[in-house]
Amino acid sequence: MVKQIEISLPNFSRGFHLITHLVTRELGDLPEQGLLHILVKHTSAGITLNENADPSVRVDFETFINKLVPENDPDFIHIYEGSDDMPSHIKSSLFGAELTIPISRGRLNMGTWQGIYLCEFRNYGGPRKLVLTILS
Amino acid sequence: MVKQIEISLPNFSRGFHLITHLVTRELGDLPEQGLLHILVKHTSAGITLNENADPSVRVDFETFINKLVPENDPDFIHIYEGSDDMPSHIKSSLFGAELTIPISRGRLNMGTWQGIYLCEFRNYGGPRKLVLTILS
Amino acid sequence: MVKQIEISLPNFSRGFHLITHLVTRELGDLPEQGLLHILVKHTSAGITLNENADPSVRVDFETFINKLVPENDPDFIHIYEGSDDMPSHIKSSLFGAELTIPISRGRLNMGTWQGIYLCEFRNYGGPRKLVLTILS
Image (cartoon, rainbow over all chains, first blue to last red; front, top):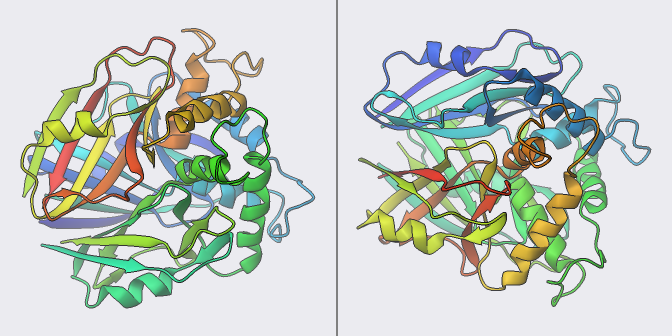
């Protein structure tokens, strides 16, 4: 069986944001077993699983990725929308724009410390759209 | 229901290439709702979603990733097939060799600006094989 | 149809480890066609597909990723559990903690040279738990 929902997230500032609750509250009753797939319909944001407890992890992610993919690299051509333009595309592909999570006993079956991060790589990304697909 | 197809892409030069049309034309009629999974059956190429309009994005990806994973790093052992050997393995795992895309209303449901990139990391990679799996 | 199994891997040292055999031996009879999804239930380890023949590839991966995400970066806040703490979270999201592999003719359908790597990013990560989900 396939169930599918499209949602819009609220505006997020540039950085890494825990959105597990925003996703699960949209899902309704989950099947006993299956998979949840999440697509971020954008090329300048990402989605990943990581630590859900200490907010400093998300701060460190932002610090690190900005050093790894620096803005104002004179080699970049695609910077029409600002210095965060091409770097945000690269970050999106390094983290990925889609994610699959198992469903067990009617709940998302992640590790205790795992949460879903929305990675906002633009300075002003606006509300991001997700496609949620449940297969069972 | 499961439908599966194996395809060979044409030879691509080293770099990032938009292959959305090459994938969709092989799929035939898609189900109303479901998921498409794509595996690149190689360890020196990758697949990712990114910007489908401006070719300079793909040029900037190639420029960036060659700086991030430099060839001729004296620390690399596995360079039997040339200086692009080990770097291409690393790039493959950073971008990933597989991808899942939702299907809605009988079509791939990506963002307006999202396309499928084949990431060719070898100088002479040859024709790359993909496994396409549709679940519905 | 959905089939799901949770397994614990043996302790692995820090580095990249081929676990294809440890996964496949737990799966039992596979369906004719479908998908296998694997989640690593941890935020300081990863999973990826890469070269299954030459062990030096895994050594080079460890060498490279330690240079890409250096420990003792004075900018990191989240290092309560040691200098490998925050770097292991970052590496987990760069490689990803989940993976999907097609099943064809009752077997995992990967490339000849592809194997499943468990990426252990902690000095002492302990036994890692995986959720294996088969959809067909």
